[in-house]
Length: 327
Image (cartoon, rainbow, N blue to C red; front, side):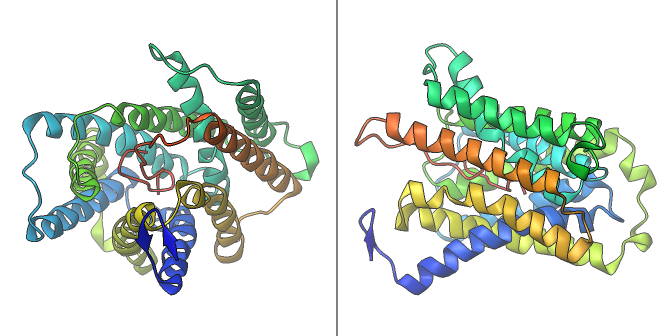
């Protein structure tokens, strides 16, 4: 198979797509398990610090370019928006919001990206199809926040939902900023830098919110520790490496399908492994939100000029995708 000029074995393509689909979809449940006995900001901060150091260490062994001071400044801003704002919102909200619903709410990120991209100076005006997709996505969120008795399913915690929406705005802002920021040519180096910077800010947030004073390592459960290690090794390192490889070995349209699959995987795993409710309200909201994401994504692909290249970025966004946030 020859895609984007790269001859990729079919088996390797399948394995990479499986990693991006399943691993990133599973990170929402892993976050829930990790924060059962570990402080959320501390867990996320150390996770990204460790992953970032390992990625930069690997890149250095391969002769990475030396980042400039301006590139570190960009990495700090991007890492803060994506990891502190985006992933930090997920780990905080999952204290009250089920992991599957958190994944569905994060799936509306393309809606916010359209708005922010439009509002910036010189930003592209959205088409009618994109506006409809935006309204559809917000309608899916409203459905999850509706009255308790709506469609026979409980409503989502409003505060947790608000935090996730703010996180989506941060993630979208960081993603759009990263397109024009001074970043290293190597996506691996840029991601490692963003993880180190974002992880450091998360650790600082942990200290400022008093998590360090309350932490009790003896109380960490085996399940939480294993979930934490899973997030570092599989979510941050293996999943990201598979994504970066796919950007070269496949087409952007195919790679972007992870945005539709991850929430479905998260909902199913939350239901199967954590006993999270799978209600009619959730199923309809999932169809509405994912339909909106598909409409926006396909419309933007059609309106993009032939032959132009976009600066692909995980998570979605700019060199890091933790499924979203994340994850």
